Length: 416
Image (cartoon, rainbow, N blue to C red; front, side, top):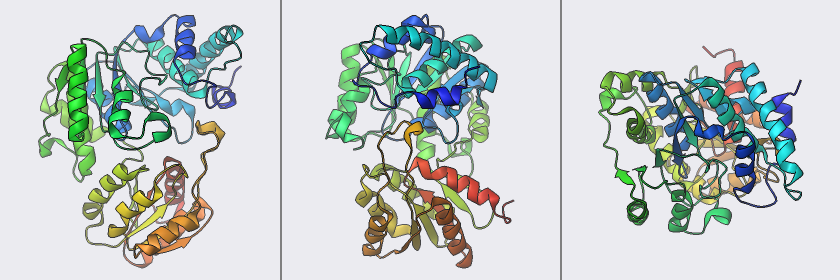
């Protein structure tokens, strides 16, 4: 029997051409599973996963059977497909991937050498799984950009544009406006656009595009703090407001008790995630300037006056200078390491920046920084420093560092 994890890892991480032709052909061969449920689309530079996860939880809280597509994964491809807050079961995932694999065999016969990618196959498997599970609605997180992203085959009722900042500029454009155009390309005529915290020029552009398409623009109101989990990071509170507004497009106005219960029960791995025990550890996927600034905003409340020690890894194609500049003012010390994604994570050829360069940037900013090449040892070291100096620890800079934060912290005897 086909092993879904091995199969997806065996596919091409990136296609020969950047476009939707392969995905459209694959969905057609599968019988258009993405049209068998309502859908909501989430695009943006930062905040996509948290908005997607919270919106799905809110919809489940109203009684709707709800699917969610999120990315990237930490351990297994199946993590990307969730139904009513739970990772898809092994048998259901294997069945969905097997159906997709059979369709890929057909599609690639006439593809002129083109190969379906890992992300395209994983998204298609999510659509198949949702259709088989008869979900009422799916909340779908875009992978990269929007216009040519594999998720841009859904007939979405509404789109959330969570944020726009400079990231993936080699593919999406050199300015915030160019990046916004790529993301807004998923907006459907006559649908709705929920806008997050956007630069003024980008918001004007978004409103103009919505007007062209006859799409309603929804600007979320801040949520009553009483509805938010205690100690939630400020940026997650803002994202929760976007999630509530997006869910309301399908479910109508949400009762306060539904909002409070759903948000309280929603786990957000790697999004200002507090991992308990001593010393306290915050795991956050901040991997660009905007994300690093949001993390820095959240740290004073988390640290409660204690010194903050960071374990950092940053990919070579990210703006390490901006990330370290945003975090340096709130750090007492840092341990720099390098975590390469690996081909099975959908980032072919991606490498981590030399940790010595990260350490030099932090040292120049007045932060005591050291280098430990192995990520597990680096996380262990930052926990040791924080514990010895009565501080708190964070792991940030890359999605791919987070798995080490979880495993090392939970392996410590002090974990409780």
